[in-house]
Image (cartoon, rainbow, N blue to C red; front, side):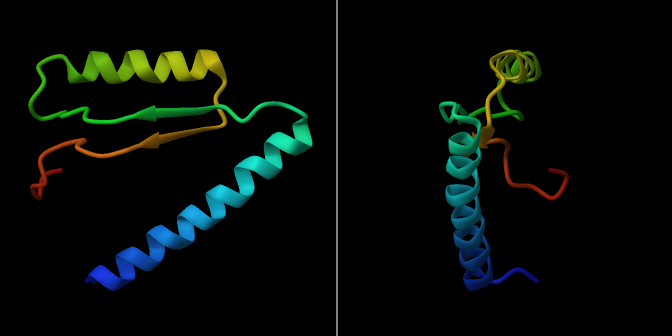
Length: 81
């Protein structure tokens, strides 16, 4: 079972890894760090959420971003999700 403290620790550790690894990769390549952000997809509520998400993914692939972050409100928190 995931406790709140374990969740916070894992998120902090993930953030530390990402915040270190991505700038290092960009610096090694001599390129700018490119990040895609998406939020509030509301997959269970918005009628065309799948099409919107696919459009975002296609744009991010075409832009060759280094990372994509999903900031929240992806779906309703229920067991089937």
